[in-house]
Every structure is written in C-alpha cells, then in structure tokens.
Image: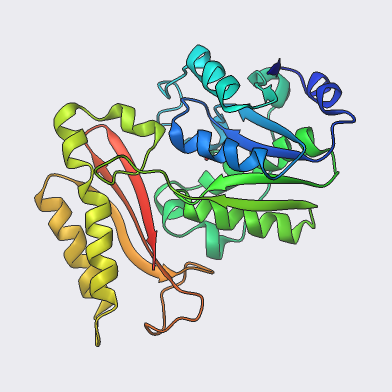
Length: 280
Ligand code: PAF
C-alpha cells in the first residue's frame, strides 16, 4: 500500500491507474470500514482510502481533540484489506488557509435530524468530501463508497454529487453489526463495559418503532415519543427516534410510501453519542 500525505503525491500515485474507488474515513477503522474497502476494490481500478479527522464537522464542544487516532493499526488493516493507496493529509495540507469557501447543503435535508442537533455538521462534511473528491478524482470519473450507517450523510453526499454534476458514482455500504446487533462505530470505543451491553437497545428501539409504525392506524408521533421515553427510562439521552421517508427524510404521509421508510435514531449513552437506522 502506497501511503501519501500530499495532494501532489496522491495525484502522482494515481496517474495512469484507471478509475479510482474511494473510501473516505476519519480513521479508527473497524470491520465496517473494511467492508467498504472490499466493496471499493470490486468497483474500481485502484482502491484509495483517506484518513483525515475533519475539524470542520465538529462543534467546539465535540470530540475533535479526543477522537481516537489509531494510525498504526489503521494502516495495517487497510494494507491487509488490499487498499492500494492511503491518503492521509495533514491539516496544513488540506486546509492551508482557513477554509472560507464551503459547500452549503440544502437545509431541508441538512438542518434536520443530525443537522438539528449538530448545526453545521453537514456543511463540514460536504466541504471536506468535495475537497477530498477534488484531490482523488481531479474531475475524472470514479466511485466512492459511504456506509448506510450514516444514512443522512449518504443522502447529502448523493445530492451534492448530483447537483454539482460530479462524475462519481456513490455506492452505499451495508451497516456492519456486532453479534448482538450494535452497529459498528468508531465512537463505540467511548462505551464502558456496562454501557456496551446496554448499547444494543438503540437498534432494538428502532426495530420496535419500525414494527409499530407498520401497524394499521399507527400514530407515529406517539410511537416516536414512546420510543424516546423508553430509552430515557434506561438511562439514555435520546436526541431523536423517528420514522422518515427514505428518499428525503421528510415525515411520511402514509405507511405506503413508494420509496420505503427508515427509522433513524441518535442518543447519548454515558460519554458516547450513538446513531443508527433501519430501512423498512
Ligand atoms: O463518515 C465519516 O467518517 C466522515 O463524515 C467523512 C465522510 C470521512 C468526512 O469526514
């Protein structure tokens, strides 16, 4: 695996190697990231991953400084997964000046759910992803893979690619789960043993919400409030548990939405804020 830290070295490493298939990450890799790398390997000519903890997508009180940085282990895992090129820019390379030009996603998609509780998050994500795309693809066609676990992020990136006519196919990677059902996430590292045992309750609450939402005459608002209440009673601090349309994350008008529904949730447990979703 070729490791590069500079944009010019990345471009040199990719020159003449065909269509890149790209997996952007913030490091602290787990099996979920590696399955995205496997998917990328099958989709392009040269597989590229990036590791960059993007300050722009963290609020001042969030965990930018303490976000787990596990460089050696990440490199070993990417190498074993068959990644060809790892781009790990320093902050001074990607943001040599303050990043004053930003990608502003549609507030109807980006200011709800995660965006409501983490204002500016999707501007930070869209801006860095646009910049990483410019570094990796330089306007040429390619493929990029994003996990379904960050469902809203996946939609925001798809809209960005469509509206800016970027020649990049966005592939969605399935959420990888631990044996008990907990979605794999870098932030699971913040859970103590008792919290780790409890953490599976988030996806269980989403499953119960999805099942209840499909019942005739379901009152979604009451079901969502009930799901949040149940988690609160177990010591969680939920931001939202909700059922939305898969295509635009607006509240459904009926249960028979042609594009399908998705139950999404975000909740704090101890020092960790976990998110998950189930499409149904
Ligand atoms: O999903 C992530 O890890 C990040 O939001 C991403 C896409 C790498 C942008 O920093």
